[in-house]
Image 1 (cartoon, helix red, strand yellow):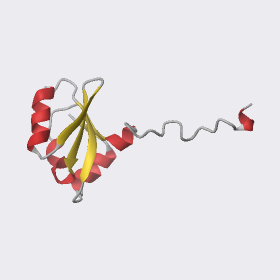
Image 2 (image 1 turned 120 degrees about the horizontal axis):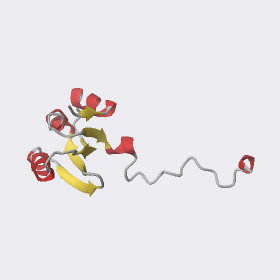
Image 3 (image 1 turned 90 degrees about the vertical axis):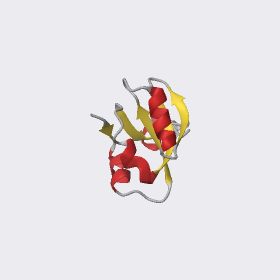
Length: 99
């Protein structure tokens, strides 16, 4: 059974007329077959990440069909912070109270 993050479930149930960047953790799924399915749904594979993971960009209207794939998990790329570049945003290097 595929794990779907809460944001993915909301998109699946209430898609908008826009695209979304998702992360597909493949587990034992065949990467070539998954890539072909994403492309058949008018999406694109944006990146191949570590640990058998693909980042894809798809129209929200096809998220329900992606959720039927036999993969380990589907999450939004934003949820995972992939490519966000703000990992240190909450740090204050000159905070005198930390001394």
